[in-house]
Image (cartoon, rainbow, N blue to C red):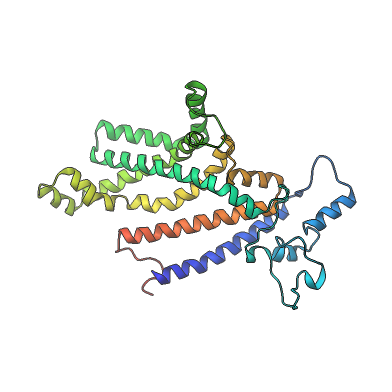
Length: 330
């Protein structure tokens, strides 16, 4: 296990560097800049703005220290430290720099304020998706061929086929405009979390239900389950104690991609419900070419997805010790 985690840590550093390099190159390859607008600035103001945010530096220097402090003196005290040693600022020091669009805010401050909101939305969506998907999938497998099984499969197929923004629109029409039970948009109370979490988690609940049904059907047909039934154990004990642990393995392996899907899906949901989360800031930073904020959110999403996938692999091993993780035994 320790060797596996060390290998993952090394690949994590390489992945972050690749993502950072590609993001840096792609953002600066797009025409336009963060301070372009309908009203063109004078040449003097453009020079001052470029100097203020180090956009007048060569690209190689922006790459190494593009998010560094804004009060660096030019020359030796800038790229070189006072003792003459090479100074790498920005990402390597954890300083993501100032936002180009949000005055008096650094990228770290924006992420610190918006990430808890996105995390709350993602956790709520995943929690109800797991609860509903696992329950429906297990029940469908136990009642195989019955009306419940057919109904679960039909609803799960519809849930997979319908995009989350369509689900969000239907929920707003029914529960906000129709019944008037929940707010249309905004953030500030638990009531604002209900509709976005339902819309974001609906497709994942459908996937989990189908995976749980498939896994349970496979386990329920194995010899040790038939032996447990032959001993006269109640069906509830057979399902919950003997079959469920092996039946949820496909669901566990899906949690990594599901977490990535919730992160990317929240970009749309946060925009629809006007939630001031990280996804909203990412969309705004991409549209406004806010280089540092876009870079910071991209690296944050990369780190979260990589960490969650690693956690899923570890949980998978704990549930089934027969599975060998990459790098073990070598």
